[in-house]
Amino acid sequence: MKSVERILALTILALISTLPTLAQTPGNAPPERVVINFMLPIAPETMNALVNVVNAQVARGVKKITIVVSSHGGDTASGFAAYNMLTKLPPDVELTTFNTGIIDSAAMLLFCAGKHRYSFPDPARFLIHGNSLDIMGNASYDANGLGAQLAQLNNLNQMSLNVIAAIVHPDKKKDIEAAMHGQIILSPKDAESWGLIDAVRTNFMEEGAVFVSVNAPASSEPLKTDTQPVITSTSITK
Image (cartoon, rainbow, N blue to C red; front, side, top):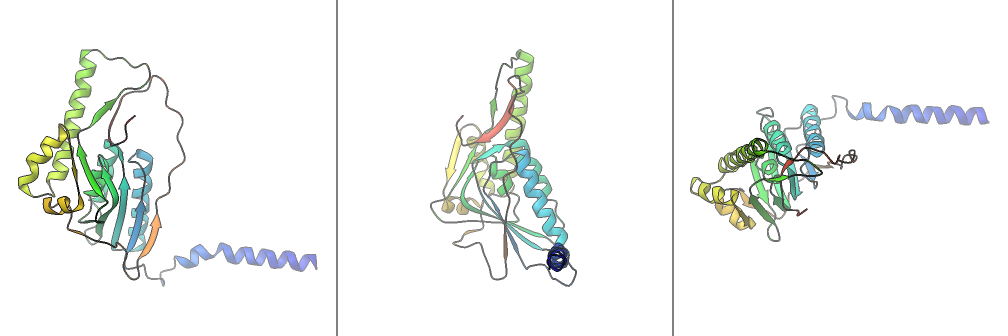
């Protein structure tokens, strides 16, 4: 009896192990649209995880992808990297971004990657402001070092300005420039009038869409006390 039970158990395990392969056979058509949930900070690990999920869906043959976003922002350089990759998807892939709560700071770069952009109605917001330099630990800089960091800040502010200005109405460029020296908060209706979003919507799902989430990556090692400065754009005060 034990022998029969063992054979049966091994058979079941063998069948289970084939399920992922069967689920990916060419006979199974990809969904019409995949909705990817992203509710994480903007960081190298989270941007890499998001791009991996998007690329996996494209490899499956998915042609319509919606990224629903709510994020306080974070690492600007990582936001740019994701923006560049997501705007270089195959031309037959339609990427949509959807604000489900807050699009703050560096998260604006991710949001702007969408060919089509939408937002929930209030309460929801968009926050635009310049980058800041976070100096942690015992790092010290002379005039040349500080000058180099200032040049990087100005460069990232200009790059952020260019990304946002490319999608809003031309007469709003001066408002974005002003925001880089301070900040501006837009409601969904404000964002629509600026051209930042196509429309305000109450639903991001549609019939036949498949919903997946980007999971938070494992925590990295603690920062060293002599770590280099980090340029960030986030609404979270430290």
